[in-house]
Image (tube, rainbow, N blue to C red; front, side):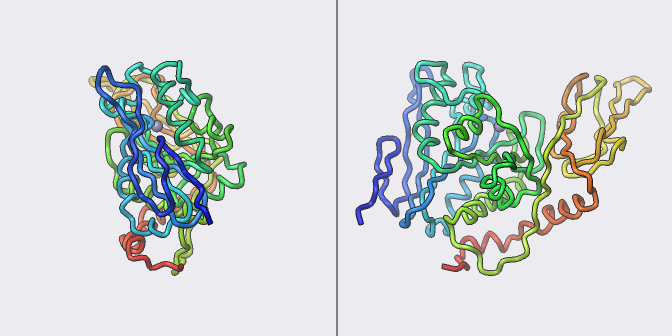
Length: 349
Ligand SMILES: [Zn+2]
């Protein structure tokens, strides 16, 4: 049977090959700049999936997730093709910045244009060379600078396929989210390439828990997408907390913040979640939870201006169930042995 060609960056990747490819990007002044990829093509045919990180150049957990992922021996059993893109916004990472040197947000610049801005040109190359050739993508993010996110998968939960994969990922929370104009997820979806968004941790920091859930999550999705063998000892997997809406709570005062509640805590309506103090003032202003839910994002900087986003709360009514599930995901979801298992190949053929 002739093997069909799979060409990326002008290079044909035959089945069974695992190789690095660099795609030419616009030069940074006179310095040649490239988009580095790893393409792993399994011996058996199957879906083509990309995993991308650092579309926002300061969001680093995903870079580490991809680095660890690439080393797992379970990938030798891959059916289909995996394209790993650890640093999409190379220029932003050099500057420790979310943005490109033209101050544009790459994740608002899709599908891009070869005659457009720098962001548009990078978006176009990434979209045409990688995204369009895939059946599915997982895009890895963290919260923006000075904020942190509880590990969560964002997707359109009305889409049966992505909802199934989002649940299979195994992050504590699945959050329904609408598509944004110019975002990779929005534009890819229109082009028929569904995307799961994994959001976990903080910009410019590594968070071990977020990284581990991310590595395991990608493997779980590849399994659910029939690209990797199923596990032998299937423990009862807890379903994540599924939430249809969320809201950023903004400060009504300026000052220094003392947060009472942490990431992953549940909060009841009107419960105090933080105090805003003035450095020499006697008054403390209370910040209350406006509805029952789970803290899925929070500000990490103690300085707050009126209007700043402090807590991201996901709507969830049954706080007892939420607490139980969050405990499970904090303590039991990621045993060391599971990672050994990925390398020891204790799996069904
Ligand atoms: Zn991001």
